[in-house]
Length: 94
Image 1 (cartoon, rainbow, N blue to C red):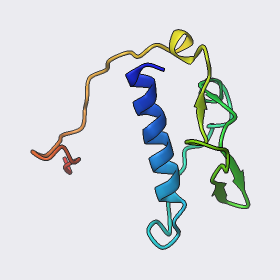
Image 2: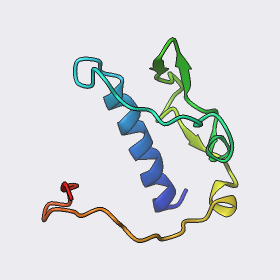
Image 3: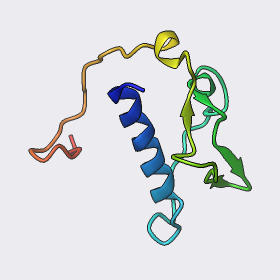
Image 4: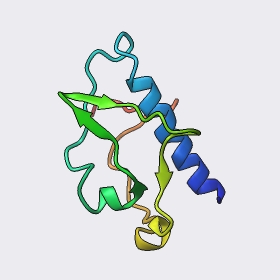
């Protein structure tokens, strides 16, 4: 696995685990359409929603695997950042 794929998987794992702690994140937005192409084609098995709750996978490792052909089918495309950032990299109100 290359470094870029490893970092993407680590970020997914960290975000999923952090958002599973109700006391830390009592309300968390989750975008619609994660279970539909093209988003569902990037990972092996999309995360599941049940009664308004995102279920944290219990598979070994980071619980989320990128599809074998994800990098070829959906290559990285740089795009301009339209959000103003602070000196620390945090998003700043416009």
